[in-house]
Image (cartoon, rainbow, N blue to C red; front, side):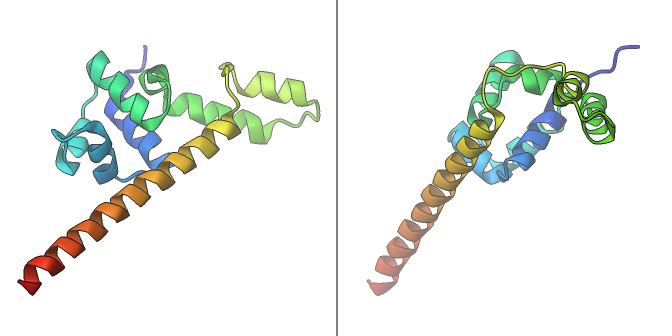
Length: 140
C-alpha cells in the first residue's frame, strides 16, 4: 500500500527546519497571505502545483522535496546514517541516501540562514517604521 504524502505537513516541516515563522512565510508569499492562511495551508494534504512551487521557492527547497518527503524516508536516512557499523564512508553514504542533490547541502543551509536573517531584518525595519509613525501621530 502506497503511503499518501501530506504536502501541508511537509511545508510545515521544512518551514520549521529553517526557523521561519508562519507570519514570515505569509509576508513572503504576498499581501493576500496571513498567518492563519498559512496555518490552513499546512493542514491540506494535497496542494495545487503552482502554489506548491511558490511556497518551495520562498522556502528555498525543491518543490519535489515537499511532494516526496515522508517520515519513513527521513527515518531510514537517520537510522542508516547513525546505525551503520561500517567505517567505509562511501558505503555509509550509499546505504543511507538514495537522493543525490546537485548542490552542496551546507551551502544551501547557509543560504537559508542568510535569507532568514534578511527576512527578520526587513521585519524589524518595518516594525521600527510603524513605531516612528505612531510616535509622530501621538506627537500631533
